[in-house]
Length: 458
Image (cartoon, rainbow, N blue to C red):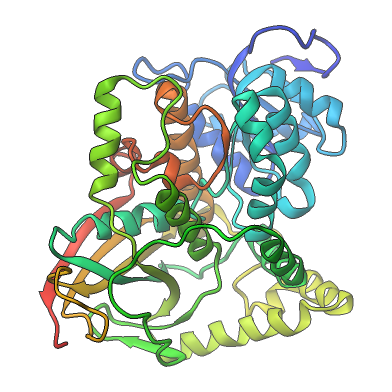
């Protein structure tokens, strides 16, 4: 195993590595390393060279040993890089085709990495679930990334690929003349033991409340973009607590990144109805992309967090109130981040879950689509008469599902780079929708199923 400083090689060299995992020694990063090692130098895999990067070579070496267990660690280079040192990041990007960024919170630490990739033409994927960061990166770096050929895609983890592929999967079951009006996702987190979340996710939520005004200002400063044409009236808000008897859940609205990311994909699709052209697509690939997007129908989309008991929903509301009220000022944020277990009612803790807690956890994400059996009939004043329910199921969201998704996105990017956009800052759905990402996830423990299709009383 070799340790390289960023001054050791000239910047002009062609990429030495297929991908570099940045922040590999973090809670999620070490699981990303473990997942990536499964595909390193496997005959059918495009991943032939890999490096780990971060501030502390000793911790990275320990991560590699942990991720390789019980095997001996492979001779993977360990590179020194720091998000506070732009020169180290530029050198990192010059050595790789692709950076997988696991360093969060992204609104504090992510921009220098995006900037280095956009400036050097290196591709970039991350596991961010922070709307303000994602939208700010699009505003600041989209044009530069298009110019240099850097494909920058955030939210390539549990945030927000299950939501993106999940609504598309539901949408594609609405075969003409049927069309959806609304698709609501209901997320159920399950475990044989206690559910313990990633502290980084909790920290991002707290900082998200602190930065909500910046997000509002950012959106106001941007020109209005196209909105998708969705048949039927705007759905009503409904009750605060939603009881879905058929899937056995009580649920409350979840202010997550998923809805924001899906809306960005829908906006981009409205502006580009045939999807985004690839760097060097074959005629067959263009035909495949056109065919895929012709089956995807827009719908109003939202996410709710579900529990099998009403008490569970009241716990969600209580945690949301703590974060919403205390996250608005510095003292409140200090309290939230100092005592995460108390204010999250035990759902988050700084040291994260144990390996047993990770292995015992799973998620189910139900997508309930309501719409019209015949969109050719005027729907302006009518209620939906058709309902389609689909479901995405997978292992624990932060340490298993997220690494699986991130690595599969990376493998597709490495295998089919010519079929993906030349460059720019995009959400994952518009980039990976027409690829075989869903099929690859299904082969790696994440399932997509049609549950029911039925008429409902209008």
